[in-house]
Image (cartoon, one colour):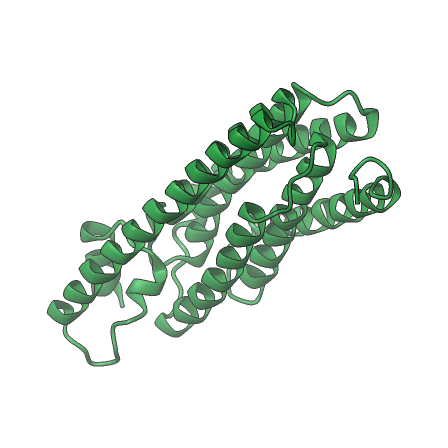
Length: 256
């Protein structure tokens, strides 16, 4: 296993679902060919997502001209799609190793950074106190979480996991993040940035909860466990609060 990990560390800025395609007893030559194939597919997928985001931004701009969206909503949404695209790029291009603890941290950090930027984005436009408080809490809590993960990274990276655990963890991670990316990108937008922000942030939080629960099923470093517990608790609370606010405002403010 050590030799395999050395190979991955040296040659692969690798997405786990490509790494797991190496069959037991398979050759590294075959693995490397499969890796190249899948990294090309991943690159093409990223370009597709980026193009979709650009088209959606352009679509929102055209709709704005037709009086569907205000200039404020248009500007807010265009910035959101830029942040989402950067988040997907950061999470899918993170350098992974044979450590679940390491992999979780380097992929969760860009996820948290996106939440901070999305919160800063809504704070430029909202005048609703409840949404301001949600955004400010996200900035504070996720900045602290990033600091804690960065401090734990070096030690956590020393804990290696078995090939089977890496495979299962990566498979679950891919399903969780693919769902999250899609739900965030396709969140229904209305001419209300408060509703838009919460509809985009709810699947973002739900993704973090599921990613954390997934990591806790495996052997991870002790320093990481309280960080994951805090993510689950704080983001469950955030989801409940945003769902409550949406339910109270949608009959009037959302135009539904």
